[in-house]
Image (tube, rainbow, N blue to C red; front, side, top):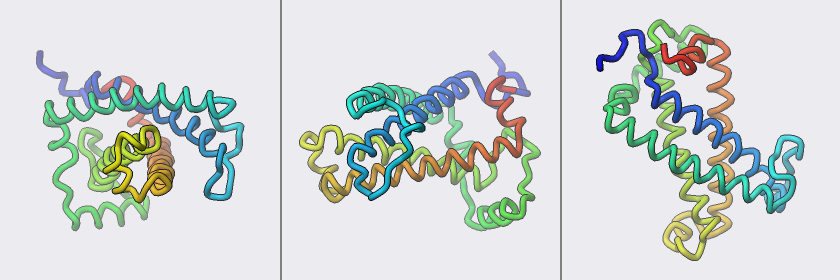
Length: 198
């Protein structure tokens, strides 16, 4: 079946995007509750924005959302690879064009004329979040099953190192979300495209 020329995001992309968004919100909120159990960085997250109510409840939410993110994330990556979308939408990234697009973005003059094509800043941001999510999963494996993943544990500087990697990778993901939502607010038709596909 020929795809409608007006289609910006196919159905599979929209579904995996929103499932990933749900999983990430649950993971971040429950992860903050888990973090509060030790507050190893010397500060606590306000309990009102955490999920789980207590450490055991937060862990249950975290593990449930982890499986959703893992399964849906793998599906998202596979469909992007198989459809050729990963290559078409995210590569190449020219350093020169990236600098030009970053300059335009900082001046508030980055063009969004064709929502089917990502500019260099978007490409880099989306590739970052994909790689950051992989780091989150790998560091999470060390925290969850440290004995079963000794090589990963060593590569991340031990259990405590993995905990720092996991926390700061989550911070990177939260920073991406803030910028992503701000950009959607500035260009609201991108939200409509992610809801309707056109």
